[in-house]
Image 1: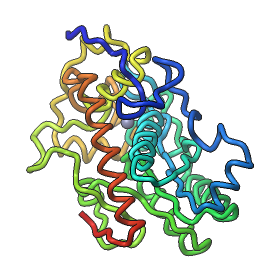
Image 2: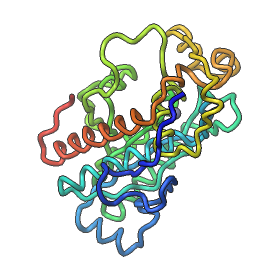
Image 3: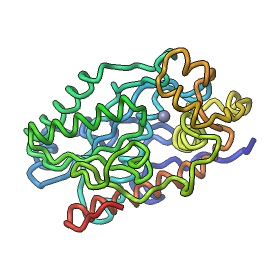
Image 4: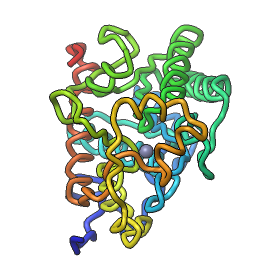
Length: 299
Ligand SMILES: [Zn+2]
């Protein structure tokens, strides 16, 4: 096991504005939740855009905490915000959403799940609130790819656009869009070039609480990663066939991933976690900038 220093967990690209409290991530820091109404109203008047992090509280194996996807979407949003700032584009981050849908991992303790209608209602009401205060551009940054969850998020954005007329968009990786069956020309999607490995999917899939999620947590929240347990974890060596069963959830899914992870957490490396999040920030900020300047086209 590597003994790497994990001190540098700032949420901006190694420049100013680092985390005030080193080693701790506070999901309200630099979000709307820590601002005053005066600041919010001023930002709306100035046409500021909103980044909306979406995650869930869900089991992530025996080595990671339940909130990985919440931290993930929050850290991604912070990174995008910092990159947008360099381009002169001001943004606010909405309080991270985390009462989503967990089908695949629903049989594990801690995987909170809600009904589709609940998630759609809460999210579209949140968008209606933003619209009422004068915000016109809302960009969703989602870290959770459970089928039920992505379907509900899609419906929420469509509903809010249609019923409230809010300019809501879902930032999506090209390969993820393809796998989830989304068309590139959907007006509510902003598709960026894929940050996932290209080529055909490998025989053994790496999907949940695996190397990437472990790397991300290890870099930004090392105190929440159980390295002793991580050291003992073996790759699951699961294939597409297993994925189809896993997706449906219940005890069948639990049998496939008895320890709650799907993939190989042992490939985790905190430096990779940092690098991937920083690349995400640059790529997504570019897509948002292109969109705001009217020159976006799907990747
Ligand atoms: Zn996750």
